[in-house]
Length: 263
Ligand SMILES: Nc1ncnc2c1ncn2[C@@H]1O[C@H](COP(=O)(O)OP(=O)(O)O)[C@@H](O)[C@H]1O
Ligand SMILES: [Mg+2]
Image 1 (spheres, rainbow, N blue to C red):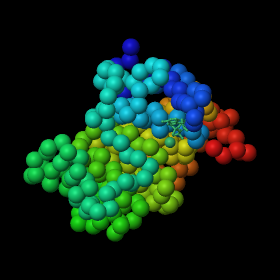
Image 2: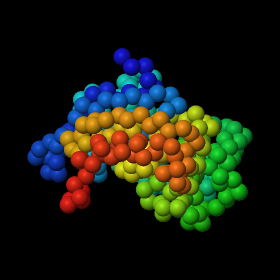
Image 3: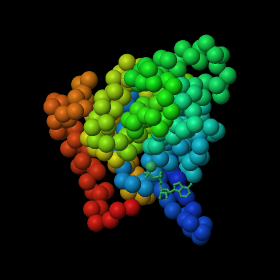
Image 4: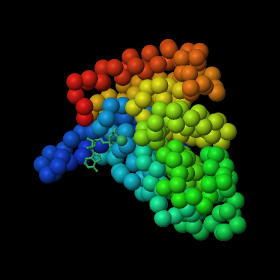
């Protein structure tokens, strides 16, 4: 049995179709592990069940078959040790950045002085110090995303689950965010599961890329990415070995892309 920090062990998931007349098999026997301090990217076509996997790790959904284990224990209820960064920033518009980032600590009953200190550190780590009293509407999309990441970092989760976090950002902001996330993950030794459908993003960020097929989704490959760090996020092709790593992922992924159909 694997002693990895997080283990997806033979995960299967069936969902009822609308009207509940039948069941659709979404995930079929998915197994992979995430060791502490590792960055794992999960890539797969739209609708293959990537978000569903993250929901299971967060304990928001029980798998139909198989189990998710965290610290060797089955995840059977809401997993408060993981942090979740959703696709949209989801900061409360009526709260300042300070108040938004402080919220998880308030909910956990962390005393005022410690809250202040931890919020300041989290905002600094994402480059948002000085913007404490801004409201989300006064921040750019990239800054809101940083705020959302700070709100996750502030309660020091054991694992950070990120669901296509940079999908909605413009291309330049996205590169900057990828670069900053790399720095953050190296400095903090964070353990990250990162869902994306961008091969370049997966290859640049990850230690391992898990490639999923179309529904019913199976694990096609778990590809180690051995490019040295730090990696150049702005000029992917300048990283020695990038092309071979991209090819390795693309070879698995290409059969899953149906250019004539969009889900
Ligand atoms: N709670 C649910 N009930 C029924 N079907 C669902 C539910 N959640 C997800 N699905 C279906 O499962 C499939 C996978 O969804 P999802 O995990 O969001 O895919 P991805 O994130 O890879 O795009 C989709 O077809 C979606 O419609
Ligand atoms: Mg999704």
